[in-house]
Length: 157
Image (tube, rainbow, N blue to C red):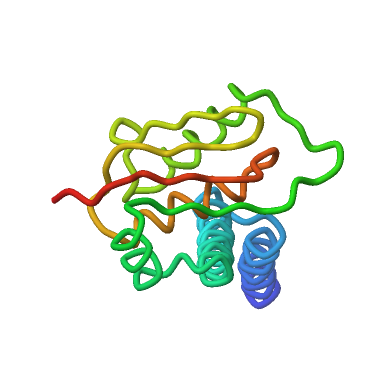
């Protein structure tokens, strides 16, 4: 009788351990789900940063290009072909660009003024480094409805 009771107790214990393992693999804890979402967000942010860097290179918005253009003309101007049917309200374009700048830690929406007229964006104000001018222009050009960006941003420390 003792042996049967001992075997039953061992069986219940192993069953409980197995059940707990099954529950953990099938139903992750809140912390595990948060960690999974954070990992996905980090990966997406890295991909977005790489995409913006690639576009900046394509549009010749590297710090060297910007310094040269600022030295020659005092501003940075870029444009792209206007897509058919792509027209957004100027106020909406400004709001989208400002929202992109809010997410960027190096760009201040208070220090950068964004104006838009028929998809042509004008940036004025200041940034803390030459690279930030390229970032601001790239983010503006990647906004739907924008076909040209005229950056009159200056670098201030």
